[in-house]
Image (cartoon, rainbow, N blue to C red; front, side):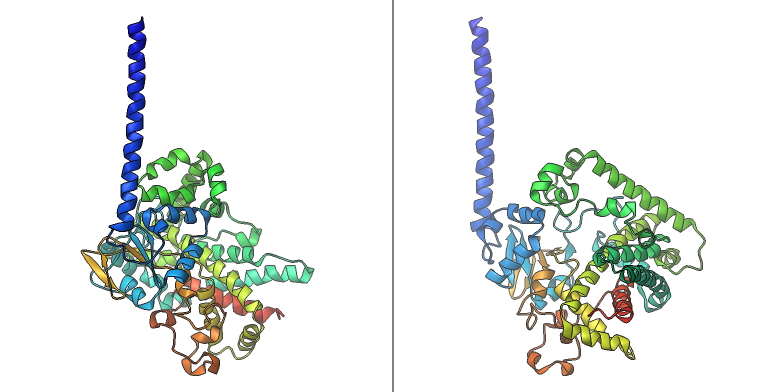
Length: 469
């Protein structure tokens, strides 16, 4: 009997020793990895805090807290135009780096989809956002007709009818002397417009004065803190670290069942609605689908699954971003009486060139970028030279939109809302007469899409209807 107990004791002790040895080796491996990243990594000479260079935990922590863009902006303020924000990632703010990273170079820098950028498509079929560069050009050729000048003219009627409905709804609040949340109503408008253009039918948010169920499914529970994450296991915030560490298979176990069902319901609704639009004989409609379906007859055209993927991307990229810009633009205009007065005069006058409203829109994009984070690329081959420094191949590099837009090296009085900076340089006030902003940032244009038309139409219609003094 004693011998049996001794055997169990020895076995238990052996298991414990094995556990301790495994933990020690894991800790030793982690420590050696940290030492390598700080002192021996090819990026060790680039500026940045050691805590960010050691592991990616700082990046993930700020990402999950929702303050990553502000943390990176603070790093740029401290360390300059290039900062090492992770063991294998550099963040830039200069126009020269912008051209090198995002310009048409050979070979081009491919997108990084390892948890730093956008999560993978729900249906597994890549659209424009996720397609590798060899397929991206084909998709762009196929969808380009939907964003041509002719298409914009054809789609203007769609935009205007929803803008008119928005003004009608807001007029009801004004006539009744009741307050309303403009941000919510801008959301209603942009979702209705993009739904009609992408799916062939409106979400009827403006009519019903509430969000469609699909919108709740797509955007629900995204903006939560780390504390809330630990209580709710929010899937959207778990995506980046799990994808980066190649553990995305755990999401189906970590996420609540209702969130997984919501994802399935979203995909099913999108598929059903798009199939309905694709099957409809609607020669009278000039929406996204009408142009892409016509183009899909050619050899390099779109398949149905690709059209579905791209329509889903448009719902997110073309609606929420537009409403955010409108909310930011409205706040900025109403808190700057000089800008408001000049803009109102242009709109209520001949309204021939709309140069001021375009300047306000672009300046609002700079001050309140709807997508302010970094969308990184991977340095190809053996490496590339960026801003005079050699960057090894495989390194993730990118431009942080918020940091670049708020940099005094890029913009005169960068923290101030000055739409005049986007007018002809000859028209700039004397107090702004200094070296122009870097060319790639200076010549930023609004996207050639309905998302471009919506801010202009809404701003013009709102100021034309009311004197918002």
